[in-house]
Amino acid sequence: MSDQVAYLGPPGTFTEQAALHHSPNGQLIPYPNITAIAQAVTSGLAAEGLVPIENSLEGSVNDTLDVLIQREGLFIRKELVIPIEHCLIAKPGTQLSDIAIVYSHPQALGQCRSFLERLMPNAQPVASLSTAAAVKDMNGSNLISAAIAPQRAAELNQGQILEKNILGDSTNMTRFVVLAISDFRSTGCDKTSLCFSFSEDSPGLLYNVLGEFYMRNINLAKVESRPSKQSLGEYIFLIDIHGHRNDPQVKDAISGLAQQASVLKIFGSYPRWTRPDST
Image (cartoon, rainbow, N blue to C red; front, side, top):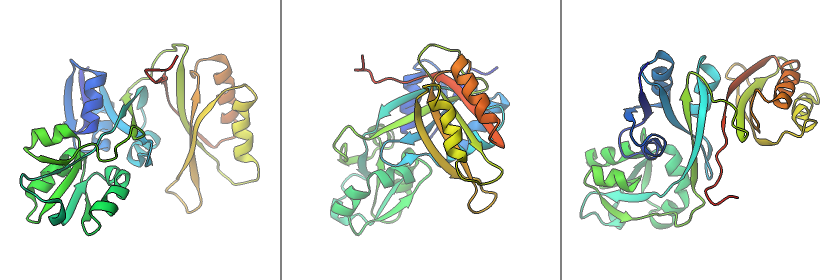
Protein backbone atom coordinates (compact mmCIF):
# COMPACT_ATOMS: atom_id res chain seq x y z
CA MET A 1 0.00 0.00 0.00
CA SER A 2 1.32 3.43 -0.97
CA ASP A 3 1.93 6.04 1.72
CA GLN A 4 1.35 8.91 -0.68
CA VAL A 5 -1.17 11.66 0.04
CA ALA A 6 -2.82 12.92 -3.15
CA TYR A 7 -4.08 16.51 -3.18
CA LEU A 8 -5.58 18.97 -5.65
CA GLY A 9 -2.52 20.59 -7.20
CA PRO A 10 -0.36 22.08 -8.43
CA PRO A 11 1.77 23.16 -5.44
CA GLY A 12 0.54 26.44 -4.01
CA THR A 13 -3.16 25.60 -3.68
CA PHE A 14 -5.13 25.87 -0.47
CA THR A 15 -5.54 22.11 -0.70
CA GLU A 16 -1.76 21.76 -0.50
CA GLN A 17 -1.89 23.97 2.60
CA ALA A 18 -4.49 21.64 4.11
CA ALA A 19 -2.44 18.58 3.10
CA LEU A 20 0.64 20.00 4.83
CA HIS A 21 -1.46 20.56 7.95
CA HIS A 22 -2.81 17.00 7.78
CA SER A 23 0.49 15.28 6.98
CA PRO A 24 3.45 17.66 7.49
CA ASN A 25 6.00 14.90 6.91
CA GLY A 26 4.06 12.91 4.34
CA GLN A 27 4.78 12.31 0.67
CA LEU A 28 2.42 14.81 -0.93
CA ILE A 29 1.61 14.28 -4.61
CA PRO A 30 -0.37 16.87 -6.61
CA TYR A 31 -3.17 15.70 -8.93
CA PRO A 32 -4.95 17.78 -11.57
CA ASN A 33 -8.55 17.19 -10.46
CA ILE A 34 -10.74 15.58 -7.82
CA THR A 35 -11.70 12.60 -9.99
CA ALA A 36 -8.02 11.73 -10.47
CA ILE A 37 -7.50 11.90 -6.70
CA ALA A 38 -10.40 9.51 -6.10
CA GLN A 39 -9.00 7.13 -8.70
CA ALA A 40 -5.54 7.25 -7.09
CA VAL A 41 -7.00 6.32 -3.71
CA THR A 42 -9.27 3.50 -4.86
CA SER A 43 -6.54 2.01 -7.08
CA GLY A 44 -3.94 2.05 -4.30
CA LEU A 45 -1.65 4.61 -5.91
CA ALA A 46 -2.25 6.86 -2.90
CA ALA A 47 -3.12 5.96 0.68
CA GLU A 48 -5.19 9.10 1.12
CA GLY A 49 -6.59 11.94 -0.94
CA LEU A 50 -7.26 15.44 0.35
CA VAL A 51 -10.00 17.45 -1.34
CA PRO A 52 -12.20 20.48 -0.57
CA ILE A 53 -15.83 19.68 0.15
CA GLU A 54 -17.43 22.89 1.45
CA ASN A 55 -16.75 26.62 1.65
CA SER A 56 -18.40 28.97 4.12
CA LEU A 57 -19.19 31.53 1.39
CA GLU A 58 -19.82 29.46 -1.75
CA GLY A 59 -21.20 26.23 -0.31
CA SER A 60 -20.45 22.67 -1.37
CA VAL A 61 -17.81 21.58 -3.86
CA ASN A 62 -19.92 19.59 -6.29
CA ASP A 63 -17.05 17.64 -7.85
CA THR A 64 -16.23 16.15 -4.45
CA LEU A 65 -19.86 15.29 -3.73
CA ASP A 66 -20.15 13.61 -7.11
CA VAL A 67 -17.16 11.31 -6.61
CA LEU A 68 -18.45 10.34 -3.17
CA ILE A 69 -21.86 9.54 -4.62
CA GLN A 70 -20.65 7.69 -7.70
CA ARG A 71 -17.45 5.89 -6.71
CA GLU A 72 -17.47 2.68 -4.70
CA GLY A 73 -14.80 1.88 -2.12
CA LEU A 74 -14.13 5.52 -1.21
CA PHE A 75 -14.72 6.87 2.30
CA ILE A 76 -14.21 10.03 4.33
CA ARG A 77 -11.61 9.38 7.02
CA LYS A 78 -11.04 12.87 8.43
CA GLU A 79 -12.17 16.46 8.11
CA LEU A 80 -10.25 19.67 8.72
CA VAL A 81 -11.04 23.34 8.27
CA ILE A 82 -8.61 26.10 7.33
CA PRO A 83 -9.08 29.86 6.84
CA ILE A 84 -8.86 31.08 3.25
CA GLU A 85 -6.86 34.23 2.55
CA HIS A 86 -6.93 35.17 -1.12
CA CYS A 87 -4.33 37.40 -2.76
CA LEU A 88 -4.58 39.29 -6.03
CA ILE A 89 -1.42 38.37 -7.92
CA ALA A 90 0.00 39.80 -11.15
CA LYS A 91 3.22 40.01 -13.12
CA PRO A 92 5.70 42.50 -11.61
CA GLY A 93 4.91 46.07 -12.66
CA THR A 94 1.22 45.46 -13.41
CA GLN A 95 -1.21 48.24 -12.51
CA LEU A 96 -4.60 47.35 -11.07
CA SER A 97 -6.42 49.62 -13.52
CA ASP A 98 -4.86 47.87 -16.54
CA ILE A 99 -5.97 44.33 -15.71
CA ALA A 100 -8.28 42.83 -18.34
CA ILE A 101 -8.58 39.23 -17.10
CA VAL A 102 -8.62 37.63 -13.65
CA TYR A 103 -7.92 33.90 -13.44
CA SER A 104 -8.86 31.64 -10.55
CA HIS A 105 -10.72 28.50 -9.54
CA PRO A 106 -14.51 28.99 -9.89
CA GLN A 107 -14.98 28.75 -6.11
CA ALA A 108 -12.43 31.52 -5.53
CA LEU A 109 -13.96 33.71 -8.24
CA GLY A 110 -17.32 33.33 -6.54
CA GLN A 111 -15.91 34.12 -3.10
CA CYS A 112 -14.24 37.29 -4.44
CA ARG A 113 -17.10 38.43 -6.67
CA SER A 114 -17.82 41.59 -4.66
CA PHE A 115 -14.14 42.57 -4.60
CA LEU A 116 -13.86 42.20 -8.37
CA GLU A 117 -17.08 44.10 -9.07
CA ARG A 118 -16.01 46.93 -6.78
CA LEU A 119 -12.38 47.43 -7.82
CA MET A 120 -12.15 45.77 -11.25
CA PRO A 121 -15.61 45.96 -12.84
CA ASN A 122 -14.27 45.69 -16.39
CA ALA A 123 -11.99 42.71 -15.79
CA GLN A 124 -13.22 39.39 -17.15
CA PRO A 125 -13.15 36.46 -14.69
CA VAL A 126 -11.80 33.26 -16.26
CA ALA A 127 -11.93 29.86 -14.58
CA SER A 128 -8.76 27.84 -13.94
CA LEU A 129 -8.35 24.27 -12.69
CA SER A 130 -7.06 25.52 -9.32
CA THR A 131 -5.95 28.72 -7.63
CA ALA A 132 -2.29 27.82 -8.16
CA ALA A 133 -2.94 26.94 -11.81
CA ALA A 134 -4.48 30.41 -12.14
CA VAL A 135 -1.07 32.00 -11.54
CA LYS A 136 0.42 29.84 -14.31
CA ASP A 137 -2.47 30.83 -16.61
CA MET A 138 -1.80 34.47 -15.79
CA ASN A 139 1.91 34.12 -16.56
CA GLY A 140 1.08 32.50 -19.90
CA SER A 141 -1.49 35.07 -20.95
CA ASN A 142 -0.78 37.60 -23.70
CA LEU A 143 -3.21 40.04 -22.09
CA ILE A 144 -2.66 42.09 -18.95
CA SER A 145 -4.05 39.76 -16.34
CA ALA A 146 -4.08 38.79 -12.68
CA ALA A 147 -4.85 35.74 -10.57
CA ILE A 148 -6.60 35.12 -7.27
CA ALA A 149 -4.56 32.60 -5.33
CA PRO A 150 -2.74 31.95 -2.04
CA GLN A 151 0.40 33.89 -1.17
CA ARG A 152 2.44 30.71 -1.61
CA ALA A 153 1.39 30.50 -5.26
CA ALA A 154 2.85 33.96 -5.84
CA GLU A 155 6.09 32.94 -4.16
CA LEU A 156 6.38 29.76 -6.26
CA ASN A 157 5.67 31.55 -9.56
CA GLN A 158 7.46 34.90 -9.11
CA GLY A 159 4.21 36.82 -8.96
CA GLN A 160 3.67 40.26 -7.45
CA ILE A 161 0.97 40.56 -4.78
CA LEU A 162 -1.21 43.58 -5.56
CA GLU A 163 -3.74 42.96 -2.77
CA LYS A 164 -3.27 40.67 0.22
CA ASN A 165 -6.16 38.96 2.04
CA ILE A 166 -8.59 40.66 -0.29
CA LEU A 167 -11.70 39.57 1.60
CA GLY A 168 -10.33 41.17 4.75
CA ASP A 169 -12.09 39.01 7.35
CA SER A 170 -11.99 35.57 8.93
CA THR A 171 -15.39 34.31 7.73
CA ASN A 172 -14.00 32.59 4.62
CA MET A 173 -13.26 29.03 5.70
CA THR A 174 -12.99 25.85 3.66
CA ARG A 175 -13.71 22.38 4.95
CA PHE A 176 -11.50 19.65 3.53
CA VAL A 177 -11.90 15.89 3.81
CA VAL A 178 -9.35 13.09 3.70
CA LEU A 179 -10.49 10.28 1.40
CA ALA A 180 -9.34 6.68 1.95
CA ILE A 181 -10.51 3.10 1.37
CA SER A 182 -11.87 2.94 4.94
CA ASP A 183 -13.27 5.42 7.41
CA PHE A 184 -12.20 6.02 11.05
CA ARG A 185 -12.95 4.24 14.29
CA SER A 186 -15.30 5.72 16.85
CA THR A 187 -13.74 8.46 19.00
CA GLY A 188 -16.76 9.71 20.93
CA CYS A 189 -16.79 13.00 18.99
CA ASP A 190 -17.62 11.99 15.44
CA LYS A 191 -19.50 12.91 12.31
CA THR A 192 -21.09 10.61 9.74
CA SER A 193 -21.82 11.63 6.15
CA LEU A 194 -24.25 9.77 3.90
CA CYS A 195 -26.59 10.12 0.96
CA PHE A 196 -29.94 8.61 0.03
CA SER A 197 -32.68 8.87 -2.55
CA PHE A 198 -36.25 7.70 -3.12
CA SER A 199 -37.69 5.69 -6.00
CA GLU A 200 -40.90 7.72 -5.94
CA ASP A 201 -42.07 11.08 -4.67
CA SER A 202 -44.82 11.33 -2.08
CA PRO A 203 -45.73 13.76 0.73
CA GLY A 204 -43.74 13.40 3.93
CA LEU A 205 -40.95 11.12 2.65
CA LEU A 206 -38.08 13.41 3.60
CA TYR A 207 -39.85 14.44 6.81
CA ASN A 208 -40.17 10.81 7.89
CA VAL A 209 -36.53 10.01 7.11
CA LEU A 210 -35.18 13.00 9.01
CA GLY A 211 -37.49 12.06 11.87
CA GLU A 212 -35.43 8.89 12.35
CA PHE A 213 -32.64 11.13 13.63
CA TYR A 214 -34.86 13.57 15.53
CA MET A 215 -36.57 10.85 17.59
CA ARG A 216 -33.15 9.57 18.68
CA ASN A 217 -31.81 13.04 19.51
CA ILE A 218 -29.16 12.87 16.78
CA ASN A 219 -28.05 16.28 15.54
CA LEU A 220 -28.25 16.99 11.81
CA ALA A 221 -25.20 19.11 10.99
CA LYS A 222 -26.01 19.54 7.30
CA VAL A 223 -28.79 18.72 4.84
CA GLU A 224 -28.64 19.38 1.10
CA SER A 225 -29.65 17.90 -2.23
CA ARG A 226 -28.03 17.23 -5.60
CA PRO A 227 -29.67 16.37 -8.93
CA SER A 228 -29.61 12.62 -9.50
CA LYS A 229 -28.47 13.23 -13.11
CA GLN A 230 -30.98 10.58 -14.12
CA SER A 231 -34.17 12.58 -14.60
CA LEU A 232 -35.29 16.18 -14.12
CA GLY A 233 -36.78 16.62 -10.66
CA GLU A 234 -35.04 13.60 -9.13
CA TYR A 235 -32.65 14.38 -6.29
CA ILE A 236 -30.10 12.75 -4.04
CA PHE A 237 -30.14 13.98 -0.45
CA LEU A 238 -26.90 14.36 1.47
CA ILE A 239 -26.70 14.72 5.24
CA ASP A 240 -24.03 15.04 7.92
CA ILE A 241 -24.97 13.87 11.41
CA HIS A 242 -23.21 13.95 14.75
CA GLY A 243 -22.18 10.48 15.87
CA HIS A 244 -20.46 7.38 14.49
CA ARG A 245 -22.22 4.86 12.25
CA ASN A 246 -21.41 2.14 14.81
CA ASP A 247 -23.03 4.04 17.69
CA PRO A 248 -26.23 2.14 18.62
CA GLN A 249 -28.53 5.14 18.19
CA VAL A 250 -26.98 6.13 14.86
CA LYS A 251 -27.07 2.54 13.65
CA ASP A 252 -30.78 2.31 14.48
CA ALA A 253 -31.53 5.60 12.72
CA ILE A 254 -29.68 4.54 9.58
CA SER A 255 -31.53 1.22 9.63
CA GLY A 256 -34.83 3.10 9.77
CA LEU A 257 -33.70 5.32 6.89
CA ALA A 258 -32.71 2.28 4.81
CA GLN A 259 -36.25 0.89 5.07
CA GLN A 260 -37.66 4.03 3.46
CA ALA A 261 -35.01 4.99 0.90
CA SER A 262 -34.40 3.22 -2.40
CA VAL A 263 -30.68 4.05 -2.32
CA LEU A 264 -28.48 4.57 0.74
CA LYS A 265 -24.73 5.12 0.76
CA ILE A 266 -22.59 5.91 3.81
CA PHE A 267 -19.60 8.08 2.94
CA GLY A 268 -17.96 7.36 6.28
CA SER A 269 -17.62 8.23 9.96
CA TYR A 270 -14.70 10.30 11.14
CA PRO A 271 -13.54 12.58 13.99
CA ARG A 272 -15.56 15.79 14.06
CA TRP A 273 -13.57 18.99 13.58
CA THR A 274 -13.87 21.49 16.42
CA ARG A 275 -12.68 25.07 16.49
CA PRO A 276 -9.30 25.45 18.22
CA ASP A 277 -10.80 27.95 20.68
CA SER A 278 -13.84 25.79 21.50
CA THR A 279 -14.21 24.39 25.00
